[in-house]
Image (cartoon, rainbow, N blue to C red; front, side, top):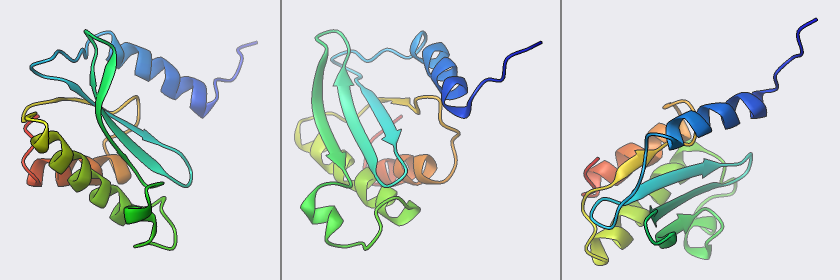
Length: 122
């Protein structure tokens, strides 16, 4: 009898598969996306030093005050713009996109496209 794999476990195995190939360096750090039911988070990470260079999330007051519910596409696009602006201020123009096992759809796609429009290259 085969055991049933949950959605969370399936995403985690996809994430492991992606992370085996996607690696952020100092010249080209990794743009990581995480989405929970109510919030969206983005970080730009240098995997060589293991440090987060830039981050943005829907928990910040600047973002939270604009929306009544923060787990949606509109909020994700604002977070994409915010993380791109902060990255450009730090001198980061090129990143590797890590969707963390999520489908490139909805909030993940909105965040990525907003970051691209704001000047990040990936």
